[in-house]
Every structure is written in C-alpha cells, then in structure tokens.
Length: 128
Image 1: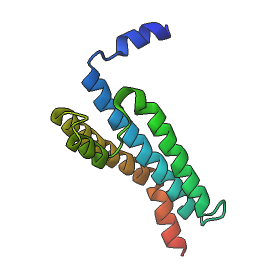
Image 2: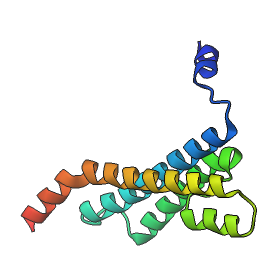
Image 3: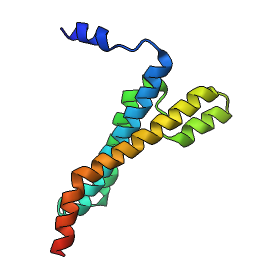
C-alpha cells in the first residue's frame, strides 16, 4: 500500500522536487525554530534558559538540512541560493524558483507559528 502511494505521489521533474524541498525545508525551519523561541518566551522561561532555545534551533536546522540536502542541496536561505548563483553553481531559473519557494515557505512557517501561539500571547499580555 505504501509503495503504491509513493508511486502515485512521486514527482519525476527534478526542478519541481527541489523547489518543493526548499519550500518545505524553509517552512519547517521557521516554524520549528520560532515555535521553540515562542514556547520559551510565553512559558515565562520556567523550563530552560536561552541555551535550550539555541540548541533547539540547531536541532531544527539539522533536521531541515537532512530533509532537503539530497533533493535540493539544502540552501534554505535566499542568500545562499543567490551566492551559489554568483558562483555559477546553479542556474538563474533554479535560483529564482528557490528564492520564491524559500520566501513563501518562511512566511507560511512564521504565520503558522503566529497562529498557534497567538492566544497564549494575548493571555500573557492580559496577565501582566
């Protein structure tokens, strides 16, 4: 059953797969990292210190890189994609698609974090 599902959902175009990988990798990076920081701030810093936030961001970054490195090279940042364009490691079309996918993924990841933690922020501000 899983193999049949995998065959149905498989994207054969390399550029499309790489662009989607950049989108989801950047989405995961921003959503996970911002959620870790939001949980620390809104949890009144009871559970950990800033080192825990830094380690959490590092773990999320490692996971995002591991998810995307074999598919797209794990740029996860428009600056990295632009740098590789200037070094002629990737083409202009690929760079533009990566930058668009990374930007949209970053905005959606940050938006999801905002939506998830918005209620906690209002409660915390009212209790201060």
